[in-house]
Image (cartoon, rainbow, N blue to C red):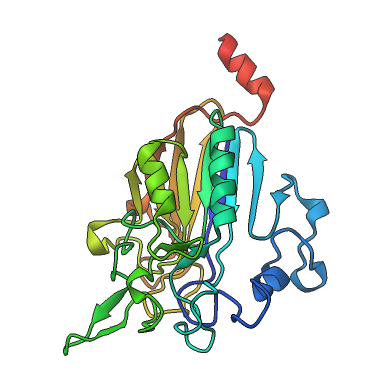
Length: 291
């Protein structure tokens, strides 16, 4: 029996889609309408009592389990030290997490070394998947000036880091997660992000949507939207885990025919190796071990 996870992202690099302004409570829009922990059901329709896999944590960082899969969910936020940069919102187009969130992530990783760990954030890490290097979110015009490409150009908003998780604990280009994973190869199995919206065959910067680095499979799952930025191709990724199998099947579904006929896009399909087999239940694990 297979168990599937659909990965998609509906927000991206435009100045008003991702975050609240600096004069508003942290992630006010996100907490009210996306509402990951179900505190604003009247607005979001998220009812936490109906979850088959309860979560543990806060809007900024929470986890949940599916068998021996452990999902570490990390919310993006605006960088409050940057008063100018992201249009009228201030802040930056690059990804931001707090120092507390990074410390939580590290504790969870180290306390769950026997799980298949999947980290999920709006952004991927630096130099991991398509267009995730410095300045790769933008392009130059015929006069050599930086302008919008995948993401908006804000001169005072650290545009060089527009494509990846740039700020940690108020530090620009911190690379806290990158340094940890480089010194702990394979500490997590997968990292899912979706900030860069583009076609499924894009390899800008010499990197595709699915790359492996530091023993981690990085997936840029893209977005459902067709209109957020000019490069958007609406797509989803289906991750299928098989009981007792140490591989995950990654399929790509195109929701429109902008790039190719609507439906499953087989050229983008991949099979990735995990650190250990997937088990939905302890009973299945024990049966497999006895065979």
